Image (cartoon, helix red, strand yellow):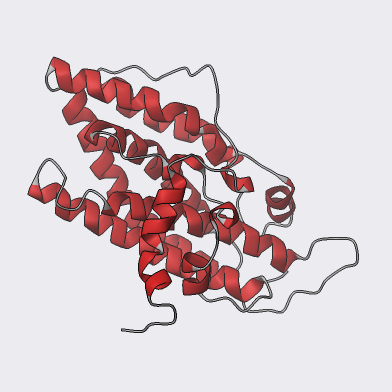
Length: 266
C-alpha cells in the first residue's frame, strides 16, 4: 500500500498509485480553495454582521483544508510544488475543482443552497476518509469532518429559516436550490483514478455516498417546506479543467497579490 509518506513504485504502463492519489487530493484541495474564495466575497456584504463572521470562519476552515490537501498533492505528484505554488501559479485550466464550488454567490439564498449541497457531501466524504488506511489522511479526514459538521448545521439552519420565513424568502430559497442542483452530480462522479484508488482501499469513492446525501438533503429541503429540484441537465467538466465563464475572474482575484509580488513573504 502506498501512503502519503512513501515513495510510490511505478509499474510500466500503469499510472502510479502516488500519481493517482495526488490527483484525488488535488481535486479535493481545489474544491476547498475555490469555495473558500467564493465565501470570502461575502465579508462586509452578508445580510447580518453575524453572517460576515460565520462565513469568514467557514472560509478559513476551507482554506485550512486546502492547505493540507494541496501540500500532500504536491508531495506525491513528483513536481515538488508547494501549497502556494499550486494555489497561486496554476492557470485556470489546471484547476480541477467541481463546478459547484465556483458558482457565483448570487443572492444569499443561492449561497445557502450551494452550502447545503456541498457541506452534506463533504461531511460524508471526510467521514469516510477518516477510515482510510493512511494515518495522515485519516487524521485529516477526522478533523475536517468535525469542522464541516458545523458548516452543515449552519447551512441547514438557513435553509429552514428562509424556507419557513416569508413568501419572498421561500421563493428565493427555492430559486437558489434550482440554481445549484444541476451541479451536484459531478461531486459523485467516478473516473479511472477514483476507481483504482477505491479498489485498492486507499481512499473512498464519492459515488456510494450519494444515496445518503440525497436522503439528508431531502430531509432538510422538505422540512423547510421546499421542493427538491429535478434538473433536466447536469453540469460537468470541472474535474477536467473546463470551467464556467466567471472562473477566470475568481482565479485572478485569488492570485492577484502573488502576481503583483511574486515570491513575496510576509
